[in-house]
Image: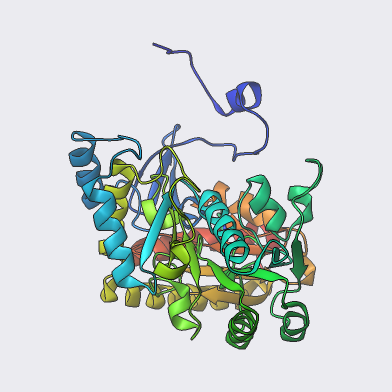
Length: 405
Ligand SMILES: *Cc1c(COP(=O)(O)O)cnc(C)c1O
């Protein structure tokens, strides 16, 4: 057994340096509170980046983890299993979709969606119909295909020739979308709220135009709901509140509450193009992940829980407005449900990280979305006392950065 002491410093010695984690090391969590290895307590407004929707160490999920963990973890896709079949049924019952393909992450779910769209266009129209339309500042994952489709060039440069047939348009630009979507378009992929790109909700009129243009040109509309899905916006999936139904939807993050699982959902007619052997995965759809996700879906799809998400979202907006009366640091608060972005005003331009560090110092974990946006993605069931305590601490963090105004 390895019982050598480890610390944050060890990260800089033995980890590939693609991340720059906080100076403390979280050790244990319960609900919306976490404790680090030194025993310091934090209120969790980050939710593991919109993942731990039902909080840490959720008792109902722990029960499923223990039960399924003692039965069967993995068998490979030469066999199916009851948890994954039930999960697919649940997701089909809750959405426009008839069928699911399971993967282990958001990027893999998007990879499957993009490959499927290319295959559908190839089968129906031929090799020329290969253009994938995406939007600037979008984020779809870090596999080479998904990162190339994503709209942040700094993530996709320097890895050799990029996959061809990818076009980026400005987000929420109706005229640009009307001009660009045409006979060569195979698919349009869009986040109903751009998460990593700054918490920017799509204009419903923009989404309708994408839907109409895709229909007019035989292209598929893919909603990347990896961040917005599983209750985050106050609806089980964000598309439900947009008036637009996609052809393919991808979901991950909160789906497993931290157990890695992702899924691509689609209709019978589109799924038929992924025939035997055309795509695959080793871990995807394993019984352990599927059992946990099944419980997550059951709990989060409860209309009372979803109403609670909308109410908590309003409460956070009110608290941010109140904070801003004192500090005058925010230009805008936007987002949906419990995916909230607070855009810093010109005086604090580029300083989101300073707020993040000050918050951690005062005992609050939160997120940023670029250099100018503070992002909140707490548990969907965060108790009111934790919200209040978190904002009391955040006020002290704002004092640290802005001075006591
Ligand atoms: C996080 C995210 C992804 C990537 O998910 P991973 O699980 O990190 O691969 C893709 N799309 C969106 C919208 C995301 O927020």
